[in-house]
Image 1 (tube, helix red, strand yellow):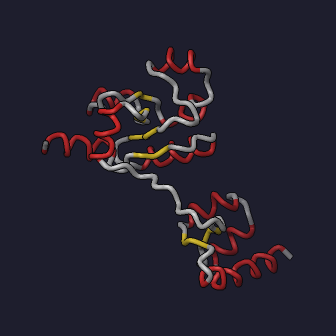
Image 2: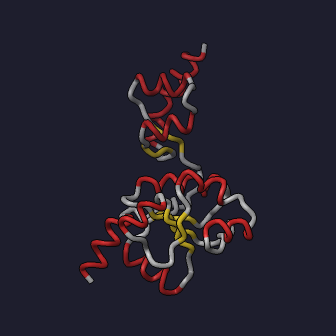
Image 3: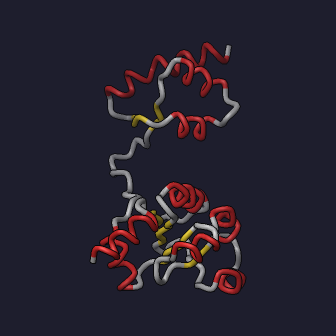
Length: 176
C-alpha cells in the first residue's frame, strides 16, 4: 500500500515540474525531507526521480551564499555576526577571519539556544538574535552550509554562509 502511494507521488512529479512548482534536489536533500527510514524516499531513490516540492509562493528563494567582497563589506560595517564553525585547532593552525566568533559545528545547535550571557562567556562574542544577519564560515564551505541549515531550523531568518571559506579568504587577502 505504501509503495502504491509512493508510486502515485513519483508519477505526479513530471506534471509538477511542468507547472514549475518543484525544484530539483540532491538525493541527500530528499532523504532529509522524507526522513532516512521513509519508504517514499527509498522508492523515489530506486526510481531515480529526485525532486523536492517548492513553496507555492511566487517569492524567490533567498540567497544563501556570500562572496569575499560581500563579507568584507559586512565586516567593515559590523552589520553581521560572522561565526566560524571550524575546530579551535584549525584556527590556530591556519588563521581566522578577523572579527569572527568560533563556534565549532558540533556546538552550533546548542550554542544558538544558550542565553546571551552564557554564549558570550563560552564563545567570546555577542550571541546573534534570530533577527540578526549571520554569516557562517569554515574551511571550504561544507560545514558552514550545515551550520546554516541548523540556524534556519532554529528560526534564524537572515542567515547565510561564506561558501569559499577560509581557503578563499586567505587567497583573496593575499591577492589584495
